[in-house]
Structure formats: C-alpha cells, structure tokens
Length: 230
Image 1 (cartoon, rainbow, N blue to C red):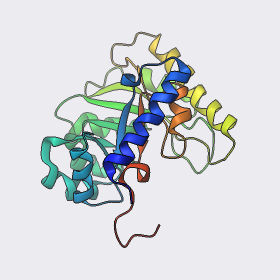
Image 2: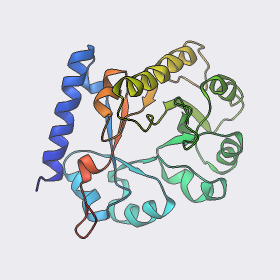
Image 3: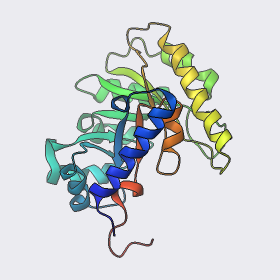
Image 4: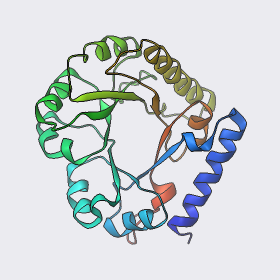
C-alpha cells in the first residue's frame, strides 16, 4: 500500500505534467487535501508530507481535527455551510469555497471577526443535483457584496458534471475560467477574483490544464482508513 507521501508525489507529478502541457507554472496550483473522511492521524500524515492545506465539509470535522493539529494547517471549508452554523465555523477557517447565497453572506458579515477569503460556488453544468449560482447570476451576486466588509471574493468554485465525457468536463472548467476572467476584469476592490477552485481526485489534471489554482483532492491523497470500504 502506498503512503500519503508517495500518493502526494504522484499528484504533484500529474500537476507538473498538466502545467507543462498548458504552459503553466506548477507553483500556481495549490493542492487541498480533503480530509473529511479520515481522522486526525491521517490528516497529520498529510502535514508531515509537507502539505498544509486541508479541506473539511462539516463543522464536526473541524471539531475533531483542529484540537489535534492546531495552527499547523491552513483550513478550507469546502462543503455547503448552513447559515445557522456560520458562527461555529467562520472564524476557524482560512477560506470558504461554497459561498452561494445572500443570506450566507449576511451571516458571515455578522459573525466574522475579520474579512474572509471566499469562493463563489457556480453551477456551470446546470445539474439540478449541484449547488451554486447559475453563471449569469454570478456577477450581480458579487457586485451586491460590495458593502460587505467581512467578505473578500478570492475567486470562483465549481464541481465538474457527473460524466465520463472528458470534453464536457473540460468545457465546464473552461466556462468557469472565462467567467472568472470577466469578473476579475471588472476591477472590483472587494472581488479580485483571481483564483479558481476546481478539480477533484478523478479530474484534477483536466482542471489544471484549464486554469485551476486550487484543486480539492481526497482519496487520491489520504486513501482510506483501515476498516473503511474500498
């Protein structure tokens, strides 16, 4: 069985080759190890392998790991965040990848003690099973956040369509990149919108080729805990 360090080396090599194909610098890409399905011990293995960006999708995951790992990690919240849980999460994370509604933004404004870097979640594929704003809703939503002094729009996030069609996946990522570029060109002070959070274990190579600056990778890095289904 491969170790976390070995799996991470493979991930980094895949990213290097994807950057080579697309004329990018691998240093532009930040890998987030999604540790939501493993315990603190496995998450510490990720840190020991030199990767400091960890992703959780539930408050309970932060509760379990932060007391053990402390400030050694940079914490990303990648799941849907209920407004009623904002108070328990917002001041414990470095980046939120799932801002998708005005009520959530307002709760962050009320609860955050400092400005929070956020990604606006966009449903590029239009699948009903996915959360996020429609592409045409994204710019008006971001403009409306201008008065919210606790939110900084770092970029956009999406999830690829649930398909094996590589071209469809690529078009979804490309659509997000083009939308990001249009919003970045607006020069909004509260929304530099330079980043793209897209790509997971099965499609991060394509995402990198299409401009991802953050990729969210779970089992391809952390594997499975013993006793867990494979």
